[in-house]
Amino acid sequence: MSVPVSFSGVESGEFNAVYYARRNGILSKVVAQKAGPEDPKNPKYKIEKIEKDGETVETAVPHISVVAYSQSGNQVRIYYIGYSDKGNRLQLRELCQTNGGPWFEGALDKKKHYIAKESRISAVVAEKQKNLNVFYLDEDDTLNVAWVTLGQEAWSNREVYDGKF
Image (cartoon, rainbow, N blue to C red; front, side, top):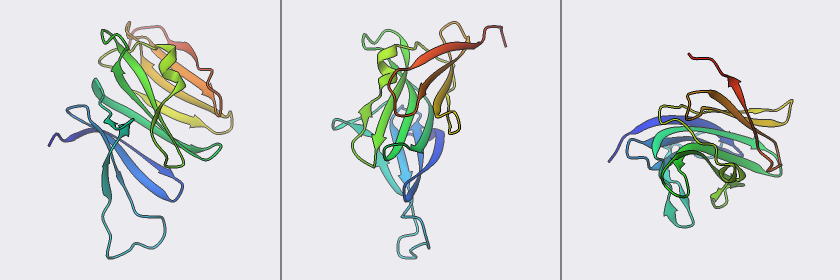
């Protein structure tokens, strides 16, 4: 079994979970039992693979970032590096889940944000601004932020820093 190499933990509804990408790219999570006093008969987390439309989701590069927030239900978003639809470029991808339902492709995927193989991803929900921000390095190693107003699907993007690190 391939070991986890990238982790991101969130709390959503009554559960907390650690999402991770394995070295081989497979996305999974470990889920705690419901919040509250620990059940001594069930003290461990449960492992689940992340599946969309019955297929295990895999990353092209095992770097992820996960956020959870409440907006029209409990929302979980996984951001990862996947292949473009043509499979020849790396792209920032979004996987979404509402109220523990099935995973589905997010609106960010339609924007085609191409990403550097070496990029890490950092996603954050800015509650006061009601924005979701995803930071990443584009193919030219320029730091970018893709952002969307919570509850909307119109993603925007801009360079954060255009100098060299």
